[in-house]
View (spheres, rainbow, N blue to C red):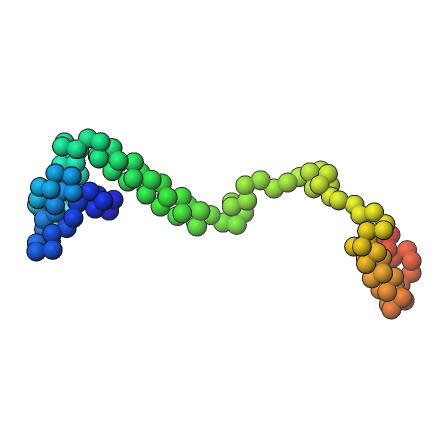
Length: 124
């Protein structure tokens, strides 16, 4: 619990905690922290606000991590690009580009080794 940023658990008695701000010792009936939170709220306003902020951040991170892990892969995709967006992003290589030359060579090799007609390439 985030409350332990503001208290120390007593080594001699686990049912008690010492406030780091005022150094008073408080009982933790049933080893709960609700009494400690109440003390912080009533006696140390600024520190109580810090506690609330920290507690909320921890809750948000727990909720975010559990909600992310429970999503299906399809739900995890925020936005799938459209075909038109994909085609606009598509880069075309100049015929002298090293990748274009490499692909031309591989296509020619495929046609020669598998004895394919030249029209085969038009369907790719």
